[in-house]
Image 1: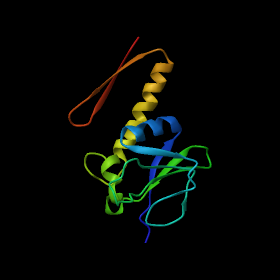
Image 2: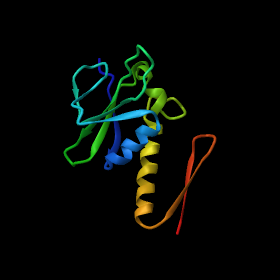
Image 3: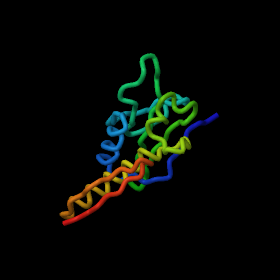
Image 4: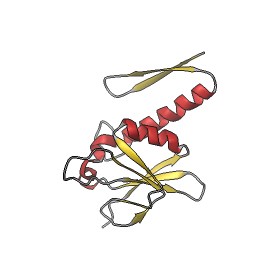
Length: 137
């Protein structure tokens, strides 16, 4: 039985994804050909893995796969909390999603674009996990 979830998002900026992952304790594995999940040997172009897993554990990974359009999609296995992956990347509801990773990705993309256009960016994080970006010139 397949546990693999394809996340309905188009990743266009791998650097923004890398930064979002690193902020959550993940390592970007450039050029990885497969990613660790219940199903062995699933192909990918890159992957994200837990940078410092607990001793003796082997957390699942997030596969980053290039699509026909040239964007990237994310694949992961949330079974058993990804053996340590999901608590790092899922939203506060613990929905077995990549909410925190996707939030970080969106923030990095927005920050990068704002800086490119000459804005100063201030980030405020709320106690509930919400993030507000304030742009000024």
